[in-house]
Image (cartoon, rainbow, N blue to C red):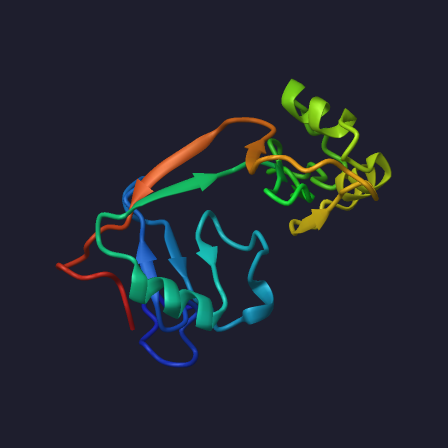
Length: 173
């Protein structure tokens, strides 16, 4: 790939990009010319979005907006109506060649409690933990109790950044 790709349909960033203030500003939230790559780890940190989604986000976000990046393999939630969800991603490899599909995931006491509660279907949770599909999955038992909204993550490693200016503007093409 050439060092600079001009704006247009072949630009791998798509039409919109938000530069984050983490690192030296090399991380972006952007669109893509390869929509099948959304959600995949195909770069060194950028986050790809579908064209309509990045366009909507780009139009709403202001320079300086705080962005919280949550790098957690497991997130779980009990919604206000009592429905329970789990989202399991393949953890980032710590060593080159490591298989993220079988890399062990450390579970917190809060997650163990979530799993053991009457409203959780253990078989559905085990299936989600095994699949590691990266999408929210309903894991409510047939007659689970209702509870208040409570989104949690298994671990707690977060990176904060801000949308930055480049020559006074958000990055766009």
